[in-house]
Length: 433
Image (tube, rainbow, N blue to C red; front, side):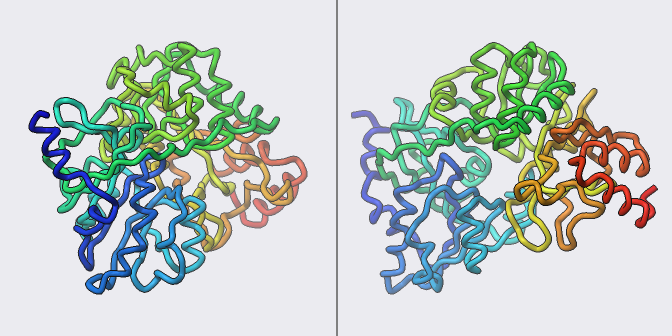
Protein backbone atom coordinates (compact mmCIF):
# COMPACT_ATOMS: atom_id res chain seq x y z
CA UNK A 1 0.00 0.00 0.00
CA UNK A 2 1.55 3.32 -1.09
CA UNK A 3 1.28 6.59 0.79
CA UNK A 4 -1.76 7.76 -1.22
CA UNK A 5 -3.67 4.55 -0.56
CA UNK A 6 -2.92 4.87 3.16
CA UNK A 7 -4.13 8.47 3.15
CA UNK A 8 -7.24 7.47 1.23
CA UNK A 9 -7.98 4.69 3.71
CA UNK A 10 -7.64 7.12 6.64
CA UNK A 11 -10.26 9.44 5.13
CA UNK A 12 -12.70 6.77 3.94
CA UNK A 13 -15.81 6.13 6.00
CA UNK A 14 -19.58 6.08 6.12
CA UNK A 15 -21.92 8.92 5.21
CA UNK A 16 -22.34 9.53 8.94
CA UNK A 17 -18.56 9.87 9.27
CA UNK A 18 -18.53 12.41 6.45
CA UNK A 19 -21.42 14.44 7.82
CA UNK A 20 -19.75 14.54 11.23
CA UNK A 21 -17.44 17.32 9.99
CA UNK A 22 -20.43 19.56 9.13
CA UNK A 23 -20.94 22.35 11.68
CA UNK A 24 -23.86 24.58 12.52
CA UNK A 25 -24.08 27.49 10.08
CA UNK A 26 -22.11 25.79 7.31
CA UNK A 27 -22.98 26.69 3.73
CA UNK A 28 -22.86 23.60 1.49
CA UNK A 29 -22.46 23.49 -2.29
CA UNK A 30 -22.98 20.07 -3.94
CA UNK A 31 -21.92 19.09 -7.45
CA UNK A 32 -24.60 19.65 -10.08
CA UNK A 33 -26.59 17.50 -12.47
CA UNK A 34 -25.09 14.07 -13.18
CA UNK A 35 -22.27 14.90 -10.76
CA UNK A 36 -24.63 15.19 -7.81
CA UNK A 37 -23.53 13.34 -4.63
CA UNK A 38 -26.80 11.44 -4.37
CA UNK A 39 -25.99 9.15 -1.45
CA UNK A 40 -24.68 11.88 0.85
CA UNK A 41 -27.52 14.26 0.03
CA UNK A 42 -29.93 11.40 0.70
CA UNK A 43 -28.80 11.38 4.33
CA UNK A 44 -28.25 15.10 4.80
CA UNK A 45 -31.48 15.35 6.79
CA UNK A 46 -29.89 13.36 9.62
CA UNK A 47 -27.99 16.49 10.60
CA UNK A 48 -31.23 17.73 12.15
CA UNK A 49 -30.91 15.00 14.78
CA UNK A 50 -27.78 16.62 16.18
CA UNK A 51 -28.32 19.01 19.09
CA UNK A 52 -25.51 21.28 17.88
CA UNK A 53 -27.05 21.80 14.41
CA UNK A 54 -29.59 24.61 14.06
CA UNK A 55 -29.24 25.90 10.50
CA UNK A 56 -27.56 24.62 7.34
CA UNK A 57 -27.68 26.39 3.99
CA UNK A 58 -27.35 24.62 0.63
CA UNK A 59 -26.47 26.26 -2.71
CA UNK A 60 -28.23 23.71 -4.89
CA UNK A 61 -28.80 24.16 -8.63
CA UNK A 62 -29.93 21.87 -11.48
CA UNK A 63 -31.25 19.42 -8.91
CA UNK A 64 -31.80 15.83 -9.99
CA UNK A 65 -32.52 14.07 -6.72
CA UNK A 66 -35.44 14.23 -4.32
CA UNK A 67 -34.26 14.02 -0.73
CA UNK A 68 -35.77 13.91 2.76
CA UNK A 69 -34.23 17.27 3.68
CA UNK A 70 -36.55 18.87 1.10
CA UNK A 71 -39.57 17.93 3.25
CA UNK A 72 -41.39 20.57 5.25
CA UNK A 73 -40.35 18.79 8.47
CA UNK A 74 -36.80 20.03 7.86
CA UNK A 75 -37.51 23.59 6.78
CA UNK A 76 -36.27 25.10 10.06
CA UNK A 77 -32.88 23.45 9.64
CA UNK A 78 -32.26 23.64 5.90
CA UNK A 79 -32.61 26.58 3.50
CA UNK A 80 -31.66 26.59 -0.16
CA UNK A 81 -30.43 28.98 -2.83
CA UNK A 82 -30.05 28.25 -6.53
CA UNK A 83 -28.39 29.70 -9.64
CA UNK A 84 -30.66 27.71 -11.96
CA UNK A 85 -33.95 25.88 -11.47
CA UNK A 86 -34.85 22.39 -12.60
CA UNK A 87 -38.16 20.70 -11.77
CA UNK A 88 -37.13 20.05 -8.16
CA UNK A 89 -35.94 23.61 -7.59
CA UNK A 90 -39.20 24.92 -9.05
CA UNK A 91 -41.22 22.85 -6.63
CA UNK A 92 -39.14 24.00 -3.68
CA UNK A 93 -39.44 27.60 -4.90
CA UNK A 94 -43.23 27.32 -4.95
CA UNK A 95 -43.08 26.00 -1.39
CA UNK A 96 -40.92 28.92 -0.28
CA UNK A 97 -37.95 26.63 0.38
CA UNK A 98 -35.58 27.79 -2.39
CA UNK A 99 -34.61 31.29 -3.50
CA UNK A 100 -33.09 32.26 -6.84
CA UNK A 101 -29.76 34.09 -7.28
CA UNK A 102 -29.74 36.16 -10.51
CA UNK A 103 -26.34 35.82 -12.17
CA UNK A 104 -24.64 35.06 -15.47
CA UNK A 105 -22.90 31.71 -15.19
CA UNK A 106 -19.36 32.83 -15.96
CA UNK A 107 -19.30 35.09 -12.93
CA UNK A 108 -21.58 33.11 -10.63
CA UNK A 109 -18.93 32.02 -8.14
CA UNK A 110 -17.10 35.35 -8.22
CA UNK A 111 -20.20 37.42 -7.48
CA UNK A 112 -21.56 34.97 -4.93
CA UNK A 113 -18.28 34.56 -3.06
CA UNK A 114 -17.73 38.32 -2.86
CA UNK A 115 -20.85 38.50 -0.69
CA UNK A 116 -21.51 35.13 0.90
CA UNK A 117 -19.15 32.23 0.23
CA UNK A 118 -20.07 28.54 0.66
CA UNK A 119 -17.49 26.82 2.85
CA UNK A 120 -18.26 23.11 2.24
CA UNK A 121 -17.98 21.36 -1.12
CA UNK A 122 -19.64 17.94 -1.54
CA UNK A 123 -18.87 16.37 -4.89
CA UNK A 124 -18.97 13.12 -6.81
CA UNK A 125 -15.74 11.81 -8.27
CA UNK A 126 -14.02 8.90 -10.00
CA UNK A 127 -11.92 6.39 -8.03
CA UNK A 128 -8.40 7.51 -7.08
CA UNK A 129 -5.57 6.79 -9.51
CA UNK A 130 -2.07 5.68 -8.56
CA UNK A 131 -0.96 9.29 -8.25
CA UNK A 132 -3.61 10.13 -5.66
CA UNK A 133 -5.96 12.03 -7.98
CA UNK A 134 -9.72 11.76 -8.44
CA UNK A 135 -11.82 13.61 -11.05
CA UNK A 136 -15.19 15.29 -10.79
CA UNK A 137 -15.99 13.81 -14.19
CA UNK A 138 -19.31 15.10 -15.55
CA UNK A 139 -19.40 18.49 -13.86
CA UNK A 140 -17.05 21.44 -13.53
CA UNK A 141 -19.32 24.46 -13.51
CA UNK A 142 -18.46 25.53 -9.96
CA UNK A 143 -16.47 22.52 -8.80
CA UNK A 144 -12.94 23.77 -9.49
CA UNK A 145 -13.62 27.01 -7.63
CA UNK A 146 -14.85 25.28 -4.48
CA UNK A 147 -12.34 22.42 -4.60
CA UNK A 148 -9.68 25.12 -4.45
CA UNK A 149 -11.35 27.33 -1.82
CA UNK A 150 -13.71 25.37 0.43
CA UNK A 151 -12.77 24.82 4.08
CA UNK A 152 -14.15 21.26 4.00
CA UNK A 153 -14.31 18.86 1.05
CA UNK A 154 -16.32 15.64 1.01
CA UNK A 155 -16.22 13.34 -2.01
CA UNK A 156 -18.55 10.53 -3.00
CA UNK A 157 -16.42 8.07 -4.99
CA UNK A 158 -18.47 6.40 -7.72
CA UNK A 159 -16.94 3.84 -10.13
CA UNK A 160 -19.83 4.40 -12.56
CA UNK A 161 -18.57 7.88 -13.46
CA UNK A 162 -16.59 8.15 -16.70
CA UNK A 163 -13.08 9.54 -16.55
CA UNK A 164 -13.36 12.90 -18.30
CA UNK A 165 -10.32 15.03 -19.12
CA UNK A 166 -9.99 18.66 -18.16
CA UNK A 167 -9.43 20.76 -15.06
CA UNK A 168 -11.38 18.25 -12.96
CA UNK A 169 -8.75 16.63 -10.76
CA UNK A 170 -8.42 16.83 -6.98
CA UNK A 171 -5.75 15.16 -4.87
CA UNK A 172 -6.49 12.99 -1.87
CA UNK A 173 -4.40 15.38 0.27
CA UNK A 174 -7.01 18.08 -0.29
CA UNK A 175 -10.04 15.95 0.63
CA UNK A 176 -11.38 15.71 4.17
CA UNK A 177 -13.76 12.75 3.89
CA UNK A 178 -14.33 9.96 1.35
CA UNK A 179 -17.53 7.90 0.96
CA UNK A 180 -17.51 5.01 -1.49
CA UNK A 181 -20.78 4.37 -3.36
CA UNK A 182 -22.01 2.50 -6.41
CA UNK A 183 -24.77 4.86 -7.52
CA UNK A 184 -26.22 4.72 -11.05
CA UNK A 185 -25.60 7.91 -13.00
CA UNK A 186 -28.79 9.77 -14.01
CA UNK A 187 -29.43 9.79 -17.74
CA UNK A 188 -31.78 11.59 -20.10
CA UNK A 189 -32.52 10.08 -23.53
CA UNK A 190 -32.44 11.98 -26.77
CA UNK A 191 -35.75 13.78 -27.11
CA UNK A 192 -38.62 12.62 -29.27
CA UNK A 193 -38.40 14.91 -32.28
CA UNK A 194 -41.74 16.34 -33.41
CA UNK A 195 -42.28 17.87 -36.84
CA UNK A 196 -42.02 21.38 -35.39
CA UNK A 197 -38.67 20.53 -33.81
CA UNK A 198 -37.43 19.06 -37.07
CA UNK A 199 -38.40 22.19 -39.00
CA UNK A 200 -36.64 24.41 -36.46
CA UNK A 201 -33.58 22.19 -36.65
CA UNK A 202 -33.41 22.54 -40.42
CA UNK A 203 -33.76 26.32 -40.32
CA UNK A 204 -31.05 26.67 -37.67
CA UNK A 205 -28.78 24.29 -39.60
CA UNK A 206 -29.01 26.61 -42.58
CA UNK A 207 -27.34 29.30 -40.46
CA UNK A 208 -24.45 27.02 -39.46
CA UNK A 209 -21.56 26.63 -41.88
CA UNK A 210 -18.82 24.05 -42.24
CA UNK A 211 -16.03 24.80 -39.77
CA UNK A 212 -18.22 26.76 -37.34
CA UNK A 213 -17.96 26.28 -33.58
CA UNK A 214 -21.33 25.69 -31.91
CA UNK A 215 -23.01 25.83 -28.52
CA UNK A 216 -26.25 24.00 -27.73
CA UNK A 217 -28.45 23.49 -24.68
CA UNK A 218 -30.90 20.84 -23.53
CA UNK A 219 -34.29 19.70 -24.84
CA UNK A 220 -36.09 18.66 -28.00
CA UNK A 221 -35.08 21.73 -30.01
CA UNK A 222 -31.31 21.41 -29.33
CA UNK A 223 -31.54 17.68 -30.03
CA UNK A 224 -33.32 18.34 -33.33
CA UNK A 225 -30.70 20.93 -34.26
CA UNK A 226 -27.88 18.46 -33.55
CA UNK A 227 -29.52 15.86 -35.80
CA UNK A 228 -29.98 18.48 -38.53
CA UNK A 229 -26.24 19.23 -38.52
CA UNK A 230 -25.13 15.75 -39.56
CA UNK A 231 -24.30 16.87 -43.12
CA UNK A 232 -21.89 19.57 -41.91
CA UNK A 233 -18.12 19.22 -41.90
CA UNK A 234 -15.44 20.01 -39.32
CA UNK A 235 -17.68 21.62 -36.72
CA UNK A 236 -16.23 22.58 -33.36
CA UNK A 237 -17.82 22.67 -29.91
CA UNK A 238 -17.41 25.29 -27.19
CA UNK A 239 -20.42 24.91 -24.96
CA UNK A 240 -21.74 25.12 -21.44
CA UNK A 241 -23.43 21.72 -21.67
CA UNK A 242 -22.21 18.71 -23.63
CA UNK A 243 -25.37 16.82 -24.60
CA UNK A 244 -26.24 13.51 -26.25
CA UNK A 245 -26.75 15.08 -29.67
CA UNK A 246 -23.19 16.36 -29.57
CA UNK A 247 -21.94 12.83 -28.88
CA UNK A 248 -23.70 11.73 -32.08
CA UNK A 249 -21.99 14.52 -34.03
CA UNK A 250 -18.59 13.66 -32.58
CA UNK A 251 -18.98 9.95 -33.27
CA UNK A 252 -20.07 10.58 -36.88
CA UNK A 253 -17.04 12.79 -37.49
CA UNK A 254 -19.17 15.90 -38.04
CA UNK A 255 -17.44 17.50 -35.06
CA UNK A 256 -13.66 17.37 -35.50
CA UNK A 257 -12.72 20.71 -33.88
CA UNK A 258 -10.06 21.06 -36.60
CA UNK A 259 -11.10 24.59 -37.54
CA UNK A 260 -11.31 26.02 -34.03
CA UNK A 261 -9.17 29.04 -33.24
CA UNK A 262 -9.22 28.27 -29.51
CA UNK A 263 -8.46 24.78 -28.13
CA UNK A 264 -8.09 23.36 -31.61
CA UNK A 265 -8.94 19.67 -31.68
CA UNK A 266 -10.84 19.80 -28.38
CA UNK A 267 -14.52 19.74 -27.47
CA UNK A 268 -14.80 22.22 -24.61
CA UNK A 269 -17.62 22.15 -22.06
CA UNK A 270 -18.34 22.78 -18.42
CA UNK A 271 -20.74 19.89 -17.67
CA UNK A 272 -22.29 16.91 -19.43
CA UNK A 273 -25.77 15.48 -19.11
CA UNK A 274 -27.39 12.97 -21.42
CA UNK A 275 -27.66 9.27 -22.21
CA UNK A 276 -25.25 6.43 -21.47
CA UNK A 277 -23.87 6.67 -24.99
CA UNK A 278 -22.70 10.20 -24.18
CA UNK A 279 -20.99 9.11 -20.98
CA UNK A 280 -19.29 6.21 -22.75
CA UNK A 281 -18.08 8.59 -25.46
CA UNK A 282 -16.60 10.99 -22.90
CA UNK A 283 -14.80 8.27 -20.95
CA UNK A 284 -11.01 8.68 -21.32
CA UNK A 285 -11.56 10.62 -24.55
CA UNK A 286 -8.50 12.84 -25.14
CA UNK A 287 -10.51 15.23 -27.34
CA UNK A 288 -12.67 16.37 -24.39
CA UNK A 289 -11.85 19.28 -22.07
CA UNK A 290 -14.18 19.81 -19.10
CA UNK A 291 -13.24 23.25 -17.80
CA UNK A 292 -14.71 25.66 -15.21
CA UNK A 293 -17.66 27.84 -16.19
CA UNK A 294 -15.82 31.00 -15.18
CA UNK A 295 -13.54 30.26 -18.14
CA UNK A 296 -15.74 28.42 -20.64
CA UNK A 297 -18.60 30.90 -20.30
CA UNK A 298 -16.54 34.05 -20.17
CA UNK A 299 -17.68 36.09 -23.21
CA UNK A 300 -14.11 37.26 -23.80
CA UNK A 301 -13.00 33.62 -24.04
CA UNK A 302 -15.95 32.57 -26.18
CA UNK A 303 -15.17 35.43 -28.59
CA UNK A 304 -11.75 33.90 -29.31
CA UNK A 305 -13.58 31.22 -31.28
CA UNK A 306 -13.92 32.52 -34.83
CA UNK A 307 -17.27 31.58 -36.42
CA UNK A 308 -18.84 30.99 -33.00
CA UNK A 309 -22.56 30.16 -33.19
CA UNK A 310 -24.51 30.37 -29.92
CA UNK A 311 -27.83 28.52 -30.22
CA UNK A 312 -30.28 28.83 -27.34
CA UNK A 313 -33.99 28.51 -26.63
CA UNK A 314 -36.49 30.85 -25.00
CA UNK A 315 -40.00 31.03 -23.61
CA UNK A 316 -41.10 34.30 -25.19
CA UNK A 317 -39.88 36.98 -27.61
CA UNK A 318 -41.40 40.41 -28.15
CA UNK A 319 -41.75 42.23 -31.44
CA UNK A 320 -38.66 44.36 -30.88
CA UNK A 321 -36.50 41.29 -30.22
CA UNK A 322 -36.33 41.14 -26.43
CA UNK A 323 -35.95 37.55 -25.23
CA UNK A 324 -37.35 36.05 -22.04
CA UNK A 325 -35.98 32.61 -21.20
CA UNK A 326 -36.36 32.37 -17.41
CA UNK A 327 -40.08 32.52 -16.80
CA UNK A 328 -43.40 34.08 -17.72
CA UNK A 329 -44.44 37.11 -15.73
CA UNK A 330 -43.43 36.72 -12.10
CA UNK A 331 -43.44 32.92 -12.35
CA UNK A 332 -39.81 31.85 -12.30
CA UNK A 333 -38.97 28.74 -14.32
CA UNK A 334 -35.22 28.29 -14.86
CA UNK A 335 -32.52 30.97 -14.72
CA UNK A 336 -30.08 33.08 -16.70
CA UNK A 337 -27.55 30.27 -16.89
CA UNK A 338 -25.05 30.84 -19.65
CA UNK A 339 -27.40 32.20 -22.31
CA UNK A 340 -26.21 35.80 -22.08
CA UNK A 341 -22.59 34.67 -21.80
CA UNK A 342 -22.77 32.65 -24.99
CA UNK A 343 -24.76 35.24 -26.91
CA UNK A 344 -22.40 38.08 -26.01
CA UNK A 345 -19.38 35.92 -26.76
CA UNK A 346 -20.74 35.01 -30.19
CA UNK A 347 -21.54 38.66 -30.88
CA UNK A 348 -17.91 39.59 -30.34
CA UNK A 349 -16.44 36.65 -32.24
CA UNK A 350 -15.26 37.03 -35.81
CA UNK A 351 -18.21 35.96 -38.00
CA UNK A 352 -20.13 34.98 -34.85
CA UNK A 353 -23.89 34.49 -34.67
CA UNK A 354 -26.40 34.50 -31.80
CA UNK A 355 -29.53 32.44 -32.47
CA UNK A 356 -32.67 31.93 -30.40
CA UNK A 357 -34.87 29.00 -31.44
CA UNK A 358 -38.34 28.35 -30.03
CA UNK A 359 -41.73 26.93 -30.93
CA UNK A 360 -44.13 29.48 -32.37
CA UNK A 361 -46.81 28.58 -29.81
CA UNK A 362 -47.19 27.23 -26.29
CA UNK A 363 -49.95 25.52 -24.32
CA UNK A 364 -51.13 23.29 -27.18
CA UNK A 365 -51.11 26.08 -29.71
CA UNK A 366 -53.30 28.47 -27.72
CA UNK A 367 -50.62 31.11 -27.02
CA UNK A 368 -48.14 32.76 -29.36
CA UNK A 369 -44.59 32.80 -28.04
CA UNK A 370 -44.02 35.92 -30.12
CA UNK A 371 -45.82 38.72 -28.35
CA UNK A 372 -46.20 42.49 -28.89
CA UNK A 373 -44.47 42.91 -25.53
CA UNK A 374 -43.24 40.47 -22.92
CA UNK A 375 -45.71 39.41 -20.26
CA UNK A 376 -45.46 42.04 -17.49
CA UNK A 377 -43.04 40.89 -14.83
CA UNK A 378 -41.01 38.73 -17.23
CA UNK A 379 -37.24 38.96 -17.00
CA UNK A 380 -35.40 40.11 -20.12
CA UNK A 381 -32.79 37.38 -20.46
CA UNK A 382 -31.32 38.76 -23.68
CA UNK A 383 -31.43 42.37 -24.72
CA UNK A 384 -32.83 43.06 -28.15
CA UNK A 385 -29.41 44.54 -28.91
CA UNK A 386 -27.59 41.21 -28.96
CA UNK A 387 -29.75 38.68 -30.85
CA UNK A 388 -29.00 38.05 -34.51
CA UNK A 389 -31.71 35.55 -35.45
CA UNK A 390 -34.99 34.25 -34.02
CA UNK A 391 -36.09 30.89 -35.44
CA UNK A 392 -39.44 29.08 -35.20
CA UNK A 393 -40.90 26.22 -37.23
CA UNK A 394 -42.18 28.93 -39.63
CA UNK A 395 -38.81 30.35 -40.56
CA UNK A 396 -35.95 32.68 -39.67
CA UNK A 397 -36.33 36.29 -38.50
CA UNK A 398 -33.14 38.26 -39.03
CA UNK A 399 -32.70 40.96 -36.35
CA UNK A 400 -29.07 41.99 -36.62
CA UNK A 401 -28.78 45.51 -37.94
CA UNK A 402 -32.55 45.74 -38.51
CA UNK A 403 -34.74 48.60 -37.40
CA UNK A 404 -37.67 47.99 -35.07
CA UNK A 405 -40.03 48.24 -38.06
CA UNK A 406 -38.04 45.58 -39.92
CA UNK A 407 -37.89 43.40 -36.82
CA UNK A 408 -41.65 43.58 -36.39
CA UNK A 409 -42.21 42.44 -39.96
CA UNK A 410 -39.64 39.65 -39.72
CA UNK A 411 -40.93 38.33 -36.40
CA UNK A 412 -44.59 38.40 -37.43
CA UNK A 413 -43.60 36.37 -40.50
CA UNK A 414 -42.37 33.50 -38.31
CA UNK A 415 -45.26 33.62 -35.82
CA UNK A 416 -48.03 31.04 -36.12
CA UNK A 417 -50.32 32.19 -38.97
CA UNK A 418 -53.39 32.40 -36.73
CA UNK A 419 -51.70 35.07 -34.56
CA UNK A 420 -50.11 37.21 -37.26
CA UNK A 421 -52.97 39.62 -37.83
CA UNK A 422 -53.46 40.41 -34.15
CA UNK A 423 -49.71 40.90 -33.77
CA UNK A 424 -49.75 43.32 -36.69
CA UNK A 425 -52.66 45.23 -35.16
CA UNK A 426 -50.91 45.38 -31.78
CA UNK A 427 -47.71 46.66 -33.41
CA UNK A 428 -49.71 49.40 -35.12
CA UNK A 429 -51.42 50.43 -31.89
CA UNK A 430 -48.14 50.45 -30.00
CA UNK A 431 -46.42 52.42 -32.79
CA UNK A 432 -43.66 49.86 -33.15
CA UNK A 433 -41.74 51.42 -35.99
